[in-house]
Amino acid sequence: MPVPVVSIGLLIASNIFMTVAWYGHLKFKTAPLVTVIAVSWSIALFEYMLQVPANRIGHGHFSAAQLKTIQEVISLTVFALFSWLYLGEKIGWQHGVGFGLICLGAWFIFQDFG
Image (tube, rainbow, N blue to C red; front, side, top):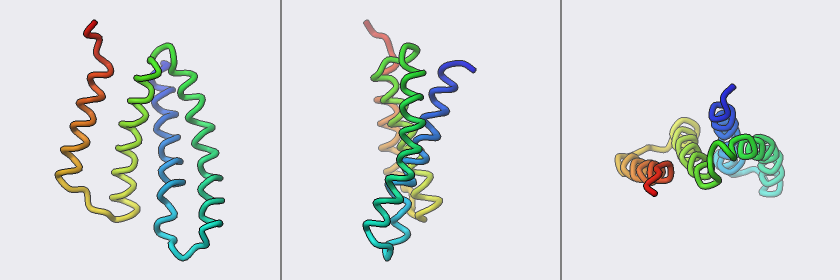
């Protein structure tokens, strides 16, 4: 498989795990905090098992700044879907505009103006 496909695929999977680890507990507010922390750390372990190889495989094809930018755009996309589908939160036009501006900023990271 091409390096970008593998690296970006692993970044998508890792961000799904991390979003669940960071925000999945918000539906379980009565669960003890120590339990929530332990479960979140357990889920986050899988995120690291995907994130580290994604960056190692992708580095060289992508710069470190490009990998981080890809990760951030994926993270925002996964979070938006998670908050809408799982948490039932509304996504408004202002979120779309903000995300669009972030994507525009990400576009500049991939340009070679020099």
